Length: 122
Ligand SMILES: [Zn+2]
Image (cartoon, rainbow, N blue to C red; front, side, top):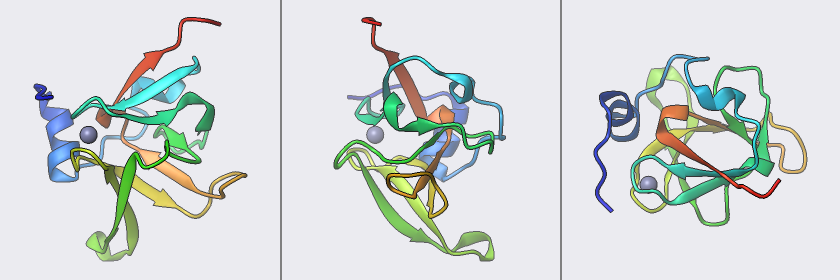
């Protein structure tokens, strides 16, 4: 599915950019639903795995099964684990080993790389 990305979305998804912390409206998103890839629409995260990390970026303790891939990112003199969409390869953010149970992982995502689709049955 080809989609037109905004310049901000293009920068993050295709050029491994990082949005300003606190800039995404998805930080405060509390409804139930699914977070999809802004590049291709693939479902990536459930709202049930979202938690408030206090970092200013939408954070999740686990992705949907098989939804994302990871690679080692050695830019900025640090070794981090980069997270991308398993379908289109768009850059989403990074994963860190300091998240909450049950996984202990913190998927720190750029909100601009995601689209939220609420479930309407609450
Ligand atoms: Zn994608």
